[in-house]
Image 1 (tube, rainbow, N blue to C red):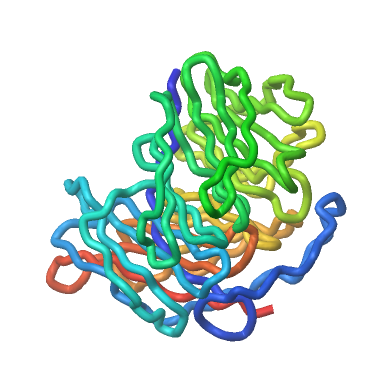
Image 2 (image 1 turned 120 degrees about the vertical axis):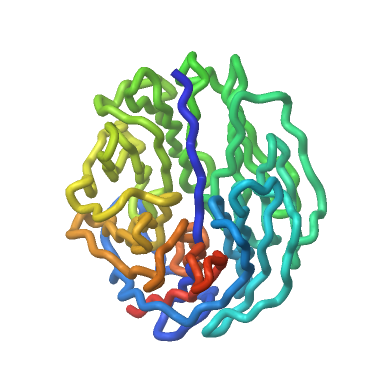
Length: 358
């Protein structure tokens, strides 16, 4: 059974501290092995910036926060179109429009200290801070290619080929710095996700095969993790060596789990009884929480400490087509991009800053 990960997105920008806009403040240093929590964000919403309009809904959204600048790139694709539109946004409340893009290619985005990276049709594209392409790398014909936005200092990619899984790391200039070749966890072409921590170790590879979640940790021995799963998404647990996994074990059911790197033990963080709506995009993590955008325009916030979940929003009083959360890897700088219906029937691609108050 082939499983793929669907990446619909919407963006809302977040700042750490009692101010609006993007923040480049560094998070507090933590011992990844302790699991000690820091203060969670008390999120609030900034004003709206309209990025683009269309007669049709924006059904696919992408965005990334620059690794060292107060800027974010946001992209959206209207239903039925093959090309994307979007903008480069700066700090402010509402966010300042720096540059618009039209008829660009779409694919998972990652912001890093040198600019941005994107995977499009198994090509890895590199961009500068103004989102001008600087270079590209063509992978061999693969079953699945993915960008893994886990660290603002690096660009991580995975390529699942028929006989091997390639895990690659690049520096901000696009130069390769590490590569691992592994036998795929699944023999049926299922999508595989890698989650890594300091350097390359410890690390986890996750896959769905036969309706079950499988994992491989530092021991490199594939293990059935003992839980059912459909499509999955994963992010790094910033408090400890672990992955935060969003899985769908059955139609209408959603689960957020922690998978520990040391022994691949699965620990529940939140189940579908807490969800008021189905997920709309990626699960992302900041210093202390996992955030999941929902189709009703709200965001579910699951503390990594395991305490009670909360909700933010909805982001708009008007019906939302799509929504996603985009944060700088492991930090609270980022936001929400979303598509919603306007009076008269047009659809707007819009952005609102998030403020993290601690």
